[in-house]
View 1 (tube, rainbow, N blue to C red):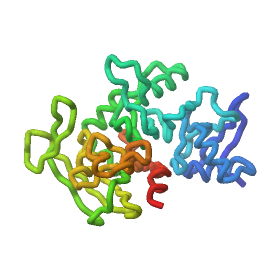
View 2: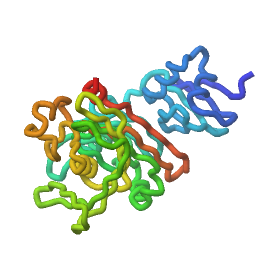
View 3: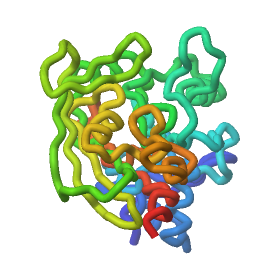
View 4: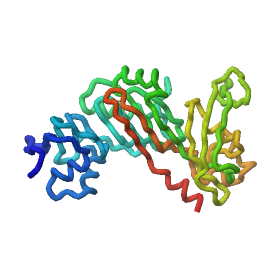
Amino acid sequence: MSNYFDYKAANHYTTYVVKESAELLPFLMTMISGVSRTKAKEFLSQRMVYVNNEIITQFNYPLKPGQVVQVAKNRHKHAMTNKMVRIVYEDAFLMVVEKKEGILTNTQPGVRQESVKSILDEYVQRQSRSFSVHTIHRLDKGTSGLLLFAKRRDIQKMFTDNWKELVTDRRYVALVQGEMEKDLGTVTSWLMDNKLYFTYSSPFDNGGKFAVTHYRTLTRKNGFSLVELKLDTGRKNQIRVHMKDLKHPIVGDYKYGSNFETYGERHDVAGRICLHAFRLAFRHPITGEFLKFESPIPSVFTQLLK
């Protein structure tokens, strides 16, 4: 006999009341007759599952007794479909999204250009919500991967004021020119911008901001290296400049060292800067839960290693 109570919501949803603690994916497989694991995952990825009226996409989302789970009978008419931005996770306070290369995180002042933030603002407004999303951190236009946004300004401030306490793991992967000499290492320097917004690195304090980048070489092949990077600091252009310091600039990075004179036609073989934010883990500032998200390494990175 089932430990859960089940009834039909009018017209659009099937509703389940949680009677005992469980994770969301197993709960759906228990409650929905004949549903496969793949189909249950599809419900989540297509944003058709609500917990206490909030869309949840996390497979292992912890359910507590008394919560109400609703599964939409059809994909929500306001679901976001955008080729540049995909929502990975959403609740009442936060949104985790995956952006493609070629789009800004924020629209620049005075410039009419689509950004991740403008796309998300339009998405929430289509749902008749009056708020705008708030940027918690940024990625360069050419960098792809995971980004975190807040739905309230006070949530944004919690991350701004307590970044190191809340964000427990944030990592990137980069395809770089040449074969790395070391398996592991750390780069430290002071970074400062000039008037042309070019970031300079100095081994000595030049009045700039101190930056620390840890790296681990994953693969060396075909004149390239795949490198995992973890930051102790989140300075502008930090990874790009530090890889230049190591004399292994990121493939496709014209600005910081991947130039034709050094690497010939191989500098832009991927058609993009090969930098991707693949992991984001943090403690939820409201619920206290630890959430971890990963984004697949772009296939062009691995193709160049074959």
